[in-house]
Length: 165
Image 1 (spheres, rainbow, N blue to C red):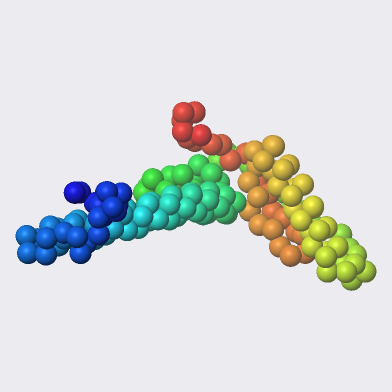
Image 2 (image 1 turned 180 degrees about the horizontal axis):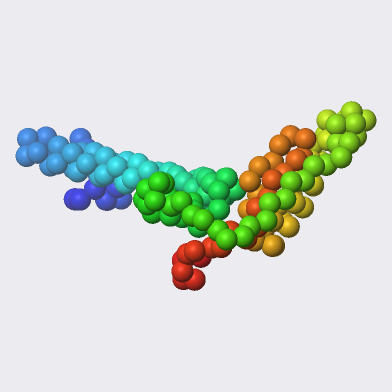
């Protein structure tokens, strides 16, 4: 007999086995060990699932942090910093750049006439449109303030090799 299930299928019970030869103890010990192994496997499968979820969450947070970093400085500078290049060795000079300052006229007055949800929706729409334009024309948005004023710099050349952009 290998398992209790096999014993029951034969119509036997533990008290039918010889009490003195150790058969019943071996049978119950094997069943207990099998149960422990199954629990260990179940725990491992749970840990694997949690690890996969953590990996996905990590990748999402990493993507968000990169987006935030790239919104704070030119992408090629951020990539150099991520690779461990010392910040004081990244200084660059440019022969010609363009700086644009933008301000949304009468936004405070307009906002005073809207409810909070409308203000947030308007802000999101304006900022999203402006961000799409900065991405499209490969300019760097230096600053955005709550009153929708922007500072944008164009003409910063991307100095990364093509295969690393």
